[in-house]
Length: 613
Image 1 (cartoon, rainbow, N blue to C red):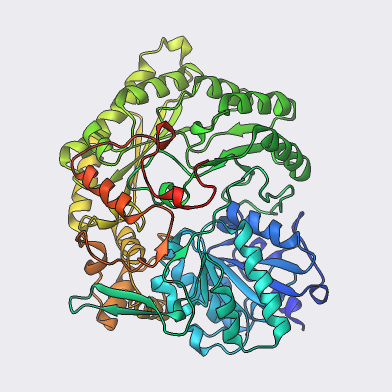
Image 2 (image 1 turned 180 degrees about the horizontal axis):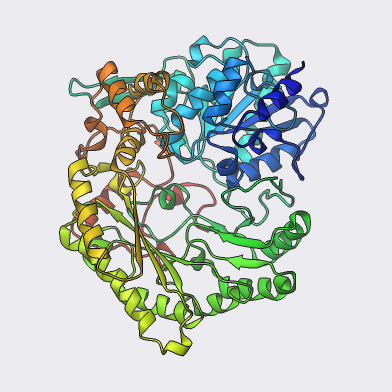
């Protein structure tokens, strides 16, 4: 049997064969002999998660728009399929052509979440690609990008190079460099030298890292003769209206997490929430024009048949033409029963008009993120919203016929007290009171309030990169305190995250190269799909740290002094360390910083050509 037939034989024995079938409507299949560069794009999680990721859709489209290149998709096989692939000697394959991943020229991997790192090692092993970069003398170059690439050090020994920032342009630069290298006939190492000249590319093998006796980083410098820059700067696409965006989408056979059209209305955020990595690394704000969004919506509805359009951004309510956009989209698509949804709303946005428009087709739960239970703590995190904003927002929603509200908070934020934790329950009670305050005949039936409380994880390139994560016992105590208080409020459901998972996430979010051995050891012990609660094995992670002689508290639970050199000190996300430190100090005094649309706050982005126009 050929490889495709062997794969088909496995599909009869796995839980969800649709994950591995390929052949979906909208998939791009090219003749590999007709292109110069074959690019495999790995999303290191299941098909249904990866197929919901907008970044993958954008890069898949922009690569396949080239005549000289092709892009094919790869997802992490679930544990049942991975076991069968090993038993039957079936290598990791792409969906479009079912070709082995190791036969491709470039293997791009998106780093969306630290807890997917073991899946990357699993994928390399299933593909037959040596885990460590120095062991590779053939096969695809391994490239990583995405938000977690802004601290790439725990993955440094496994990856040939990282790409920072927006991928629409930088992906083409790395492909062009590959074509040039391939035509030159030069050794493999020369390609790394060529891509290191691209300002947003970081080649970890070209840098030396030294440590102090106390374990902190003492220096990160380019190796002599490498030609690598002292600072690697992120790629930035300033004109989002004219940037590549897919006008056709792959339509999955089975259910995926977000089975709808996703329209990115703008990129970046001006609010400056101090816990939010995305709000820092995706600066500055760049909007797509309303005309372009309407054009894309028409084409994507026609091309896919989807019945929902999600207006995507970090804070959709901040789009400058949101009411007009929603009104026009509803006018165009109401007869086709296409719903317009707003997945990310701030509670201080003017929602009434937009909610009135988007609910004309059908309603979903309204999602709001107060993040903290008291005004003091919201000022610490620079959330910039008040209790009055929440009351106005939910009252508007209830008056427009909503009855389901989701409220997102965090436990363990810097300076948090029990009073702040109990404030979450008080806000949930306040939301219920807003519903009950309406005349009964004006209320939509079936009030549902969901309170979700994640565990705070300090992230690199945020003002809270200096903060310590709260210890396990104290987090659990606060979760139980909140659970007891919420149980007294009728109609409230409480969801919270396991501390163990957030702890390992914090370790890798601020870790260095010495964690690579821990990561490999954890994978060899059996860690896979760590972001899935039914697969996460905290006991194996603890064993991996012990086996490698690494203390995880050093990374997660230690507040960093102001002058400490971070493992990512040689990377530039646009925001300056001086700005972040200034924000950290203001947080400790509960001092707010204004939205930068109201005036520049000196974050450092103006150093980038064309930024903040």
